[in-house]
Image 1 (cartoon, rainbow, N blue to C red):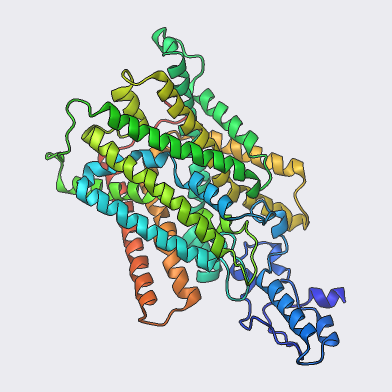
Image 2: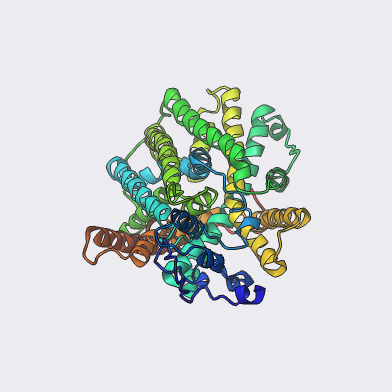
Length: 519
């Protein structure tokens, strides 16, 4: 019997003589959506022949109950190894958990540079671009949430799996592997840089820069990076995505708080002398076009997190009466309403206060210290820096979780068993050490954010539209068909333009390259 069960092929259609299946659409091949590993050869939950032997009356109420139960099992069928992986081993999430995770990952320090985009776009085009991108990414979020569960019951709990199901195994990897790796591990590396630098800023604020006045430095920037990394690695020992819901709640409160504090304090303190909103006339037309493209990239990159929405939804229970897309969309709606209430005042108020005097690095936090550091109390400055550090620590946990999931997948598929605690802890310490090494070795990576952000842009604005067309197959020339084709093509064109603009900016203005010398 065990040999017969192991030889079942999920790609072949099996016939049950008495009980019809509740979901008649055949399930897709596991190779289309699972990571390439030995787990792909393990069949999904097979139909039990015992039901067909016992239930014979066609109108039997017991038969209907068993058929409904069978439909429920088909609807929630999973990869057999999912219960051992950190993203899907706990499926007791809810709309509140989804809102906490989305808020903590959706508002980050990248939002603090939004006023810099307005310096090239101006008031009208800046507000229009921010509004259009916000509505656009909300629509693609809705698409991903609907695509999380297929009609055959398969759940795509990773962005890469959904891409492979839509575009094929090879093409799906080629299109999404690099952008999702950057959005996960690259974001963690950037958070180490930002968190370490903000820790140093907080320390100097507390001791009133007495160390710098005496030309003494208690800790170098590399050591501040190490302090932040060690703190983040300690939090990474929480086992799975659901277990960090409380951490995400703290991060969400911190992110909303520091965004509000920064723009409110800036507006209250007033505009510094010499603020202007005029565009620089001496800049060439080509350079101005590149500045506009970089500004659009800043706006688009402010709404990141699409590579995490499927993972967050994968932590929720699901059944035919209450599919996971309902609480997930509810949590996303509330969280993005709060995100909009933070980002729009941050961008508009920040540009009104600082105009073309916005620093090119550090965004509003550096502007607050530079122009209002003397007039603002140290308690407010210190509180703002502490909130940025807290949000960076909590965001590290969410963006690192797909990396942990992928590392543990390799172990699980080889041993066909869950990771022991020492393997899980060791893999997370290893990732933290690797991210710290890259942050120290390549401290100029944030200067390439425009280039890499352009490469990652389709993950947010284009790929979900194409996935909907391939998987849902809307009627040709219908409204959904036209809408997704237009948005998908526009997203790809915008991505190409952003990459070209970033390359032109790097070539013409250069990048200060310094290895193993963070400043």
